[in-house]
Length: 346
Image (tube, rainbow, N blue to C red; front, side, top):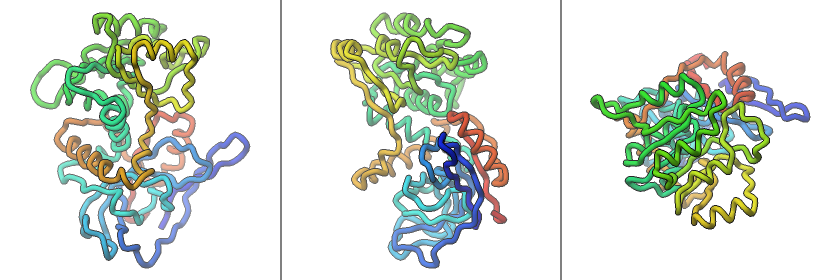
């Protein structure tokens, strides 16, 4: 059985991707499920040696003696844990049943593979960390990317006023025309703030104007600049801007793993009684005590995708032989994603 793996080479940690033969054990452990993988999506890679492919969609081929949730020939979807020995880019993998949920029949494999992890991250940011509630307001930085789009749709569904930033004219048009699936209604996004072509300085006044100078209850970023002197070509806001737009009692959910706050920043947050939370969607598999909530989130995500509440941007599925080039491209452009389709020959 072929699978895609990667290994760090050289001092700079450059990743080399390779397709290798893998062998499955003859006997499953009691709670494992053997899944024939149909689709998966790759994520940003941060370890020296890792099995490639985390989000998988497939068909159950065999179950362990104590498996109670699944039967052979059922379609399932899930995210492989970080310590999984198998590459998701294998034709068949063994995985514990508690990492999988059933895939609704009406939900396409490509759709769920394209957005599952980003949807989990959006749930974690809005429900778990920001404690969103009806009539709250939220600023989603870079709402046109996959994660931002999931945050926008989930926030709108729960009655929040959504503001977002656009990083190109195409993104701006897409976000302004984003509407619910049923009927011709108002746009999902209350205001799209352009931050391209030197307009990033407009972020703070635009947010304050839209909220009557009160600020937003929730800010969700996709990375921030820590210093004013940093390059603004990627349209990433500075941490001071995000603190400025937070309302009293607001929640800032950051994806920046090395965020540094200076004493004046902390004093300003203290005056606002605001909080900062770090978004790590992998945390759900770090403790067995969280498995129940994690499975509930996965189930709710696939249900919302099947009914059109969550609609990821369309993705084209690549064959396995193109996966190596695609993963090398992702390494240099971490925000890009790839969906890989496996066939019987793989």
